[in-house]
Image (cartoon, rainbow, N blue to C red):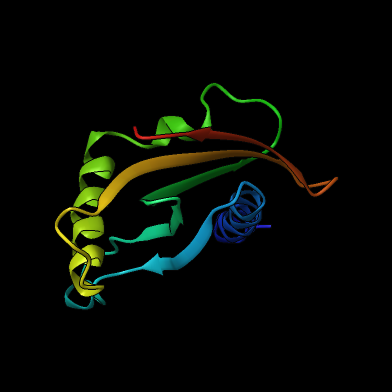
Length: 125
């Protein structure tokens, strides 16, 4: 499985995890129209629970060990891009300026042999 496939597999697991936790999936792999084909800035999952919209970055790594965790890949610049793209999503969907939203990270360490994952959910980063 290459890194793209691991990423897609991780996003699917993350969606199922969120649904089990009572979230409604609103969108996946959202890219603003004005950015399509220019520079890949996307939000992996947009979900809602209660009255809060969550812009969720999913990071997946295959294997058991390593010197860093998947969530370590989300730096300040990545968070800033998620916020900009998230604000664009809110405008595209005609959300009220008072809409509550936040940025979350879902980190997955995937065991490819057993098709299982260890999931960590970091809320409102």
